[in-house]
Length: 186
View 1 (cartoon, one colour):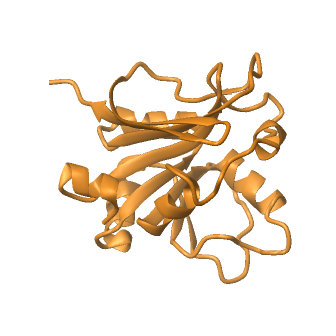
View 2 (cartoon, rainbow, N blue to C red):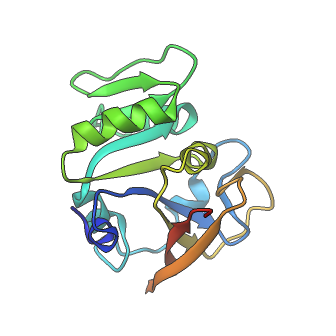
């Protein structure tokens, strides 16, 4: 179980992502070029490398999945964890990848939890998918690495009204990082 899950005392579901300062995770054309040119220490505070060690299963939307497939370089698939992709269409699966397709976050969350064992769950992207997990009461934490850039428009960070409690902050080179607990309605 990751440190974040330990805070809650059980397995946790995290939305871990980067955002522009004006609240977008990708451009209107689904580009992350703005993010990939930023200065971050992958082994620094609140960075991906340490976070990913505590993750047992992933969830991602179809746009994120297709972006990963297009931008994975020489690797056919970069994740060892089982991954649930939320889509209504047929998509390719790289050889050797444990990719499962889903439509319902509640049913998939149950399957993901069983597959993850004592490790946490990661909603990789996008914001709408993280919002669906939040709507179902299944999102525990939101981790955002804010890049020093504005996009003006694009895919929103989290298109929902949520109350959050700030748990931790860090600076990782040019990124301002925050970790929040989702406050569920009484």
